[in-house]
Amino acid sequence: MAARGDSPAPPRAAILPSRKAFSPIDILLIGVWFALATGLFELAVGLASIHGRGVITYDTLRTNWHHVWMVPLSYAALFLAPVTAAVGLALAAPRFRRGRAAIGGFAALSAWSLALGVPGLNTPARLALAGGLAAAATRLALGHPDGFRRLVRATAPAGLVLVALAAAGATAFEHHRGPSATPAKGDPNVVVIVLDTVRADSLTPYGSERDVTPNLARLAREGVLFRNARSTASWTLPAHASLFTGRFPSELSVDVGRPLDGEFPTLAERLSARGFATAGFVANLENCNAWYGLDRGFDHYEDFYENDRVDAREILRCSRLGRFTAASKWGAKLVRTAFGPGSYQYRKSAAMINRDALAWLDARPDDGRPFFMFLNYFDAHDPYIPPADASRKFSAGTNAPRDAYDDCLAYLDGQIGRLLDDLDRRGLRDDTMIVVTADHGESFGEHGLAGHGISLYRAETHIPLIVVAPGKTPRESAVDRPVSLRDVAPTILDLLGDGPGPFPGPSLSTAWQTFPAAELAEEDEPVFLELDRAEAVPDEAGDAPARLGTMRSLVAGRHAYILNGDGGEELYDIKTDPEERQDLASLPESRDRLRLFRDLMRPLIDVD
Image (cartoon, rainbow, N blue to C red; front, side, top):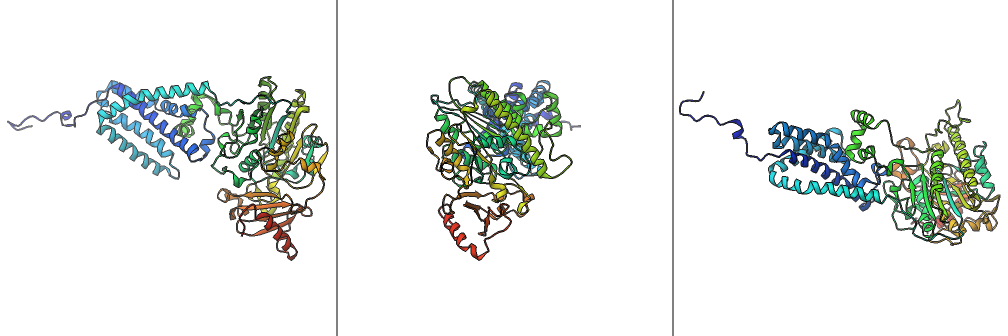
């Protein structure tokens, strides 16, 4: 009890610092502001990373082409529940209008999203970082309430309008690039088929002990079979970039996490400029994704089915916080409840690629324009599991990877046969150039290795190459000389009567026009290969040669020469020793040949 004469104690509220309250509308706009600010910041960082620094991440590969407006909208949707709750509390209890709880909650959501984007942090570190950021943002906003209120009222509505305009623009102008050139007259159609992870010696036309690919054998009899074709690298991304540009991997920007830039023209760009309708359909969604720049020059390019889709699930997945929510145990349940079951389509079968390609073919306008169609099949890639309805002729009752691989090849060959028949039924085969090749092979225990992208041995680099151009390629012809994947683009242009165009490699037409069965001397036209991915070699590859640093190889005549990253040399006679079991580099009689290969290599790289 206060003593007589003492003033009564002031009410508790009177001793709190003076602070203007935020109205429920202010709370609503503050929540919208935090959502849009977080989304726009994430979008800006992503765009700067992709287009400024040229960095590609796994999140990038799965980014929807509408991400410019989907990212901020995703955050607006994720903030909807906490914003609604905060507005309701502000209406029900005036003390919540002071804003500390609402602003602190919004800031915590934004800060957690930002922390998720910092690589290398464990969960406690992310929580600490998010807590610090949220506390700092809350103090700053409450320390200047009038200024913060004015900022929010001015920018939150403008942000919503900006997102709406971006969405309207993106849906009006879909991610589609039509050809600008006038239709080419008299050009045949061109179909390029890449059999991802297919080594040549596993196929029937290359002497496989099993008749695994009779349809490819039939196609080979219609044109030219190159018996000793080599990729430019032993993994997907640089090999496809070489195929499209005619350049060696070391000449190109493309690498793990880095897209193909516009320095060199692509085959699709050249054919599009010539008047072709161009379309690509890929099953290797990781390394043939459009974000890696392999879609340059294509009017239509399909990788992930969902990448052009506009729906609630895609909007959620477009933001980092949305992906985190959908991946959490409780979040996944909410997503399934709200949208039903669904998942990313990470692998497409050959039947799916055929279906999509033929659908595009049938839907294109009848304007007389020839088409260029690129098909990437992924069925032979590990884990070597053919579709459920495919036959298990070779792997039934066995656990041998090579048997499962052959079943995948048999399924793939059947689908290629169906594609050829479908083209025939449409009356297109007689006016269509078809090129079948691979990006690389696969090791199955040779040199103690399994997989690809870990060496430059023949198992990983010897690829099929079949060229069928009605009226321009001889039937039932075979070429023994070593040739390179990089020569496919100039060969196609040459067969179209356009010379090699902008591609530096030679046309392979000279190979079947002049003594196709003759072996070249080793000083003539060597085939160059390289591999530079020491940092990306998986742990399970053990002491793979690629760990030693940049590898380079030359194949000429009957010999293959390998220069390892540590300077060690290997030499193999691929005619008498196709499995490359006996390294000849240490033999005295190999000195002159090694010196020859060093001389051949010197113009290509700086070799001491």
